[in-house]
Length: 251
Length: 269
Image (cartoon, rainbow over the protein chains, first blue to last red):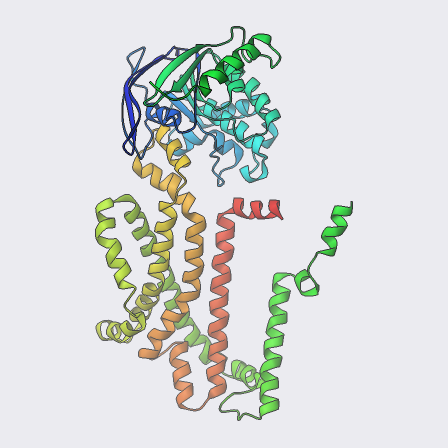
C-alpha cells in the first residue's frame, strides 16, 4: 500500500477571540517528509491534532482529503513529545499497543504480530528489553519504544508532534538517523521547534507565520536524509530559516 | 566512592533498618508493655481495664464462642466489602461512560454523603430484620462512596496523551473505557480499596450494635452488660486482627495486580 498525500483546505482555528489561522490551505506530498515550524502558540500543534482528528478545546474546522480518495482514518500513526508508554504493559506490549487495545488480531496471527514487534524492537536497538517494564528504561530508550510502536501501526501517514524534543541532544541525533531510515517512503508531517532538526530531516519545510497565520513554504536542503550536521548547505539554510521564523507577525 | 559513604552515613537508625513485620511486632510489644504499665502504676480495677494476661486467658478460654461470632462478623465484612466494591466500581464506570447519568447521579451521590450512615443503621434494621443483611448492607454503604469516588476520579484523570493514542488507534468509547481508562485508574482505585478495607469492619460492627443476636459487635455489648470486660477486650482483639488481615490482604492483592508499580518503586530506591 503506497502512502497517500494529504490536501488540507479551509483549516480554521480560533483561540478565544483570536483567529490563529483562517481558511488555511496546505498540501502534503505522498511519501515525503514535511516539517511544520513556527513560533510558540502559532497553532502548528493544533493543526496537526486537527489532521489527526484529535480533541481540541478551541473552535476549529478542517477539510482534509487524501490523494487516493480513501479515508485517512485507520491509516495514520501518532507520535507525540511524551513517549506515552503505558506502565502496566511490558515493552513488547507497548509496541503492540494498537493490536492489544483494539483486542482483535486483524490479519496476522498473534505470534506473527509478536514476531513483527520483536523485529521492530531490534531495529530500534532494544531487542533485549522486550520483557522489561517501561519504568526501567531511560528517556531515550522510552522514545525508541514509542518509535517502534508508531512503526508497528504500519500506517501510510505518520503525524509527529515534537517527537524528539524531550531527549538530550545526542540521543536526538541518533533518533533522527533511526526515524529517517525507518520512516522512509511514508507521508510524514512533523511539528518541531528545532530548525536544525527540520533541516536534517525534511523534504519540505512549512513555516506558519503571521496572525492569522499563513503557511510559508521554504526550500529544504537537497541530498539524502538525514543530512550531516556539517553539511554547508544545511548551515546556509539554517540562517535563512531562523530569519524567517524571527520575522514579526503581520499580514 | 565518597558518594556511597555519604549515603551510608545518612541511613536511618536501628528502627529504620528493621523489616516491616519486625517493626509491627516491636510496636505491638511496646503497646502491651504500656498497657501493663498503666495497670501496674494506677491500680485501675480489672472491670475497667483488664490486664493483657487476662485478655489472653479470655481469648483461649472463650475460643469457641469467639470463633463462632468472628465467623459471623467476617461473613458480614467480606460480603459488604465485595458488594460495596462491585457496586462502587459499576457506578464509577457508568458515571465515566454516560454523561446524562453524571449530571443526575453525581449531585445525588455527593448529597448522600451528608447523611450520617450510623443513623441509617436502625432504619436498615427495621426494614431488613436482625439477620446478616442489614450488617452487610451497612458495610456496603460505608465502602460504596470511597470506591465510587476514587474510581470515578481515576477514570476521569486519564492522561490526554493516552486518549489521543486511543483515538488514532480507532478505539470505540467502550474499548477506551475498559482498556485505557480502567487500567490507568488502578492506582487511584487502589487507594479507594485500601480505604474500603479499613472501613468495612466499622460498618459491620455498627450494624451489630444496633441489633443482632450474634457477631463480635454483639458479643462486645453482651460482655459489657455482664461486666465480662476481658471477653469484651478479647472480641476487640479478634476484630482488630481480622481488620488488619483484611487490610494487608487487600494491600498484597493490589501489589500483585500492579507489578509495574512495585518495580518502579524498587527502581527508584
